[in-house]
Image 1 (tube, one colour):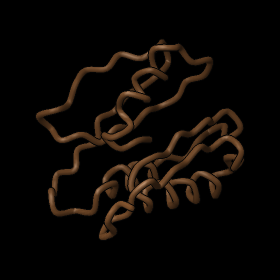
Image 2 (tube, helix red, strand yellow; image 1 turned 120 degrees about the vertical axis):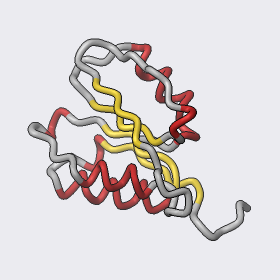
Image 3 (cartoon, one colour; image 1 turned 90 degrees about the vertical axis):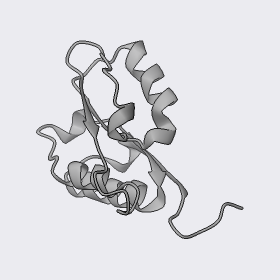
Image 4 (cartoon, one colour; image 1 turned 90 degrees about the horizontal axis):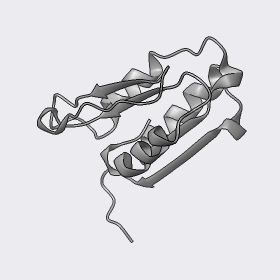
Length: 116
């Protein structure tokens, strides 16, 4: 799961082909939504932040919290974006049985904090 700032990386990953059946939930403003076709077995879902005043990443985090992997040992996760999305998303996946080593995450910015 990535925020819109991770789009280019996500699209490159999708284009390489993947050996499993991952889901790439995406959060984008509605007018920017695009049809993205991944390799066979990959489901891409656009997650729209409908309340523009909502905390960035909250809609994506809610979507992730609704996800429980059937086979957690097959999950490879890439969580980048606002700090809370990355950290809480990782906690959720670990609680679902996904090994920490199979989760890349980076909260490279935080709501209410200026960049250094």
